[in-house]
Image 1 (cartoon, rainbow, N blue to C red):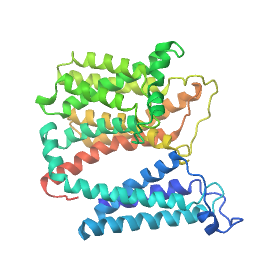
Image 2: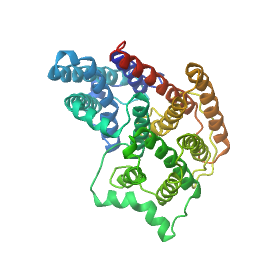
Image 3: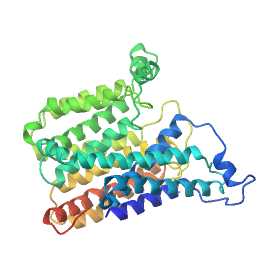
Image 4: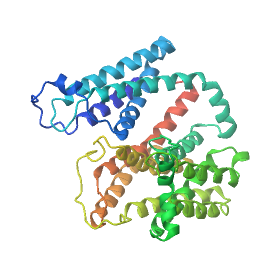
Length: 394
């Protein structure tokens, strides 16, 4: 399993680094000159180069774990460094890509950091497991619910770079201040999207926690902490719509006592959040965009926005899978397989409708990501049960 994940992520990195694979040729200057020439490195590029190689370091360290902690870190770092070096050399042969030793260095650092994080968490494993058992119900399904909420939180705080700079803090609060001053208008559709989102996630988190931790105050504090944490994080901003939507959602959650009804409400709320968010016009935009049929074309331009968009697209369909599994269907295999087609076609329809919405960028990629995200809970459940039965080992 670990080797398969490492190979898959490596393939995704190569695809993203060499996209769109056209224009191969001999450059005017040698690849080594391009690689070694100093260039301007933006903070966004720096962060992105580190972040995209973090998972590679993590996965490689898991594959090499049998060699010991120190050797695993060294082998993982060497793997990522060689991969990045090869990719940077090939980028010199593509006119649409830029080869740089800066990228190689930051990619290597990202791989090393991912491997070190894996080592540290491995040593903290027993403590993490004990803490998780105190908070989360037993079994793979509750853990999946926590993962759904975690993916949403990751999308809210990405790229996970806090800055205490006063200018950054002011920027993080600027949307709230502008609405309160009257220099910007309050957007009810955004507030409604947040209300639907946090309503569904509150129900999912409550279902995943042990009964003694399902208090509304505990769940409410978590979501408000995530929203407030956006202020010091680079590229993130807190909005008045988010605060209002969260407040409305957490008021409604207090009236939901029956788990079956709560699951139905959560399912409907996620669907509502998707529709409102996907068909909401972008403020100030007037033009319409054509449909993009090339997968990941808009996500693989070395822009942090692409990763953030993936996180925002993944969590709703992880949540749909979680809710479907909790409903305990009589034929889960059929539900899982049929759901792939339903999710893909539904999201594809929403993306096509965006061709009539100003400022939106309709893209087949979101339909692919949504269908893939839907399958993850079912695979997780299957693997979790095999591990518990002792017939499968990671």
